[in-house]
Amino acid sequence: MLQKKGIRYLRFSRDKQSFHSIERQDQITGQWMSFNNVDIVDTFKDEGHTARTFDRPDIKQLFEFIKRNHRGIDYLVVAELTLFSREAGDAINMVKKIQSEYNIRIVSAGRGTIYDCLDHNSFFMMGLEFLLGHSENIKRQNDINGGIYTAKAVKGKWIHGGKRAPYGYQFEGSGENRHLMVNTEEAFVVITIYENYLAGVPNYKVLEEVKKLGFNRTGNSAIQNILNNPIYYGFQYVKPWKELKGGFFPLKNHTPIIDADTWHKVQERNKRSSDKIRVLLSDDFPLRGVLKCHCSVMLTGAPSRNRWGNYYNYYKCRISGHNNLRAEIIHDQLLEALKYISLPKRVIENIKTESAQILDINLKDNKRRLQKREKELDQSCDQLESIETKWINNQIGFETYNRWHSQLIPKIGSLKADIEKLSEDENDVYLLLQNQLDRLSDLQYVYTIATTTQKQAFIRQGFDNRLYYQNRVYRTPYILPIFEHNLLVLKEKRLLELDEKKMAGHKIPPGGADGSRTRLIQI
Figure 1 (cartoon, rainbow, N blue to C red):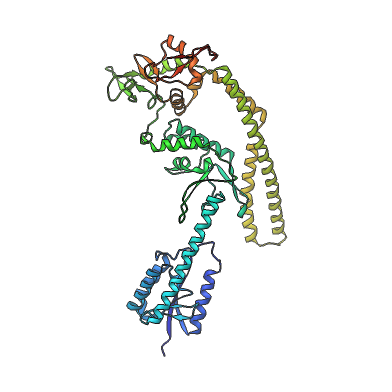
Figure 2: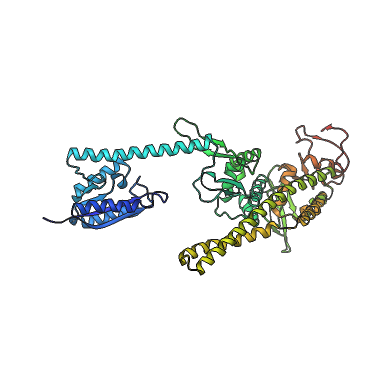
């Protein structure tokens, strides 16, 4: 009697499945082949691959092996048919093809059954085993999806498959107690991204700016991903499940970084296609993209050569040709106007008070984090000393020592860096804050030292994206209320005028330079 021969296929789909899954399958299939006196020709293993499709590296090699060597193979042995495939229809067709074309029969070693597609009873039992596996897979997936929906939509838990926390947060705790905590430094970057985006700064420029602040996400969509993530205002997206609706659901015991109003404003701006136009910023043309012609067309900016061959920068109306403005002149004119635009003293005092309060809260939070990091550093140093002692005394092997040592050294270095950063002198921070806030009364200085991005943000917000130039004067139908007390002097000096025709009922209160108001006049 000829010796029967077979090949084996072993598989488990995820790293979180039993570590002994492949070993168990190896044992079950090996025992069946030994008991039935079947030689093992070869074994194919797919580790970490789903059984929903045949797009798996080793099963592809198995099929190629069968094509080349089928004459010397009698059986394809698996521990269970569901490990071969969980899609009953595709699996049955594949098994039928293997038997009809290559005369190889599939074996379910766990059930001790050799299936024959040409025998109706055997074919029925094979189909039943595949269907049972498929049914179990559907039930398990429903249980998982139902559990995820309940945890997210009902319990308000944050569930995500990623190994790292969303930017702006960090993991605290482990297992069921693992949750998100705000990372103060990263949260500041997130706030900066939202503020710059709403100020009209292009995404590519926002990315350039926040990289200087330590933003470490990469890719063309890095900024947009931050802007689209509802977790920053305390919500998460939940997929619909069966008859239950999906959508945004609030997170419980979660600290948002962005207020809901800001997040919704960003989403509204995302919908407007005009905001997606890429604007190239240049330090030579800070008003390009924010200053309009009186015909409402945005002015463009570029160098222009005169008849003597010299180049000068000009702003131009590219459609109507209404304006052809020497950049140097209107830049100086804007700086002159800013000399007469000031914040009311009461506003500056309020900013100082609120900033001091916020700073005090942040410093207390830093102090708490500092104490926690110092405690973690002491524990890590003690662990390192303990590991080194055990290694010296031959109580542990080199592999164990090396694993712990390679984990503790970077952790200690990181903790020391955090401690140094959190140990800044509080008095220096307060002094720096007060000195810088005093500069707020000098907007000409603030504008001069600002980056091009910041200059454009100031103009957009200060004039609601409606600043334009006509007849050698800056004009606007809107100015921030805190600047309104400067309008009379600006008009007298022909630096900036309020466009009365375009104001649509906007009210301007006259008053002194300190922002005091005596009465309201309808313009």
